[in-house]
Image 1 (cartoon, rainbow, N blue to C red):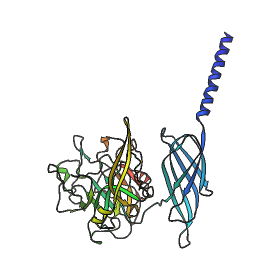
Image 2 (image 1 turned 60 degrees about the horizontal axis):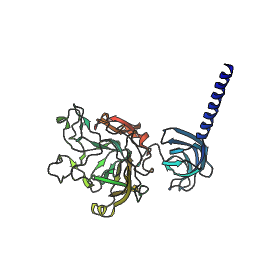
Image 3 (image 1 turned 120 degrees about the vertical axis):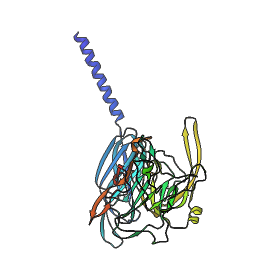
Length: 413
């Protein structure tokens, strides 16, 4: 009996040693050297107090590394093998063109990279990430899910955008453009050529009319832009009367059985381009992204010279298929504000340059989420000055927005 007991103990010890050996084998860490590329508008500077957050894309495991001081704009960390996303925040000390010393918050990210067999080097482009934006207009609220009907269905006609003057001076909305992305944030492809660093690929573009100073917006005030400026409560008691909206978008359908509603008492946006032959409605699940830009050319010139033709490959069970597409592009330097939208369960990538936005807001949790009806994404209040609301704008929609807010086109901060 003692001999048998000894054998069991020996076997258990061997198994334990084997398990430990396996754990050590799978716990192999590799060196990742990150090179930080400073914002293009800054020549020289010192990085400090960096926080690097690595998310392993297969397991969701997150690893955080603190880098108090940065030598030569590089840092090396050890990570387990895997497929990663990395986010970085920190501070940058530099001098402006006048020689004045400044300190700014910076941030950057890489959507995905592999750390599998060998030590790796990656470069992270950094961008200034302020705590607020006094540069102009912002998208304060986006409602694309539609309101719920008493029977639990979605009522689509009451969607809207809220544009807000986030400054302390009068701004003019003439030639402001609302644009929807050509690509989905829940389906990633390698589009060639990749223009994201310089342009935003779009397929719906609507513009506020005006000759320059026809549409003034006072500090802390907003423009409500709706799909249909009608009293929606007549069709859906859970909706709103939007007849007092500032603008509506109107589409002349080429299919007689589908027509839009035009409230002639409310001005229409100028339709620059839209992919649909019928009626445009923002993506109901919130799987596309939106930009607020300033049109800097004529409609004819834009439609002629700002096309974007691209190729990509779709890989399926039966093989790969090469695809082609065509849309339009808006230069990044025309864009005043950008908001990526997605859903946590199905998110794959951001479809803007990280200089414009480094996160995403969401009204849907997943594909087909019926609980998203009546939910919007609403920009957070940073603070108030003399009764005027200043909204948060750090160019990171994950942080700047209240997700799944109760939609209300007449909401006041």
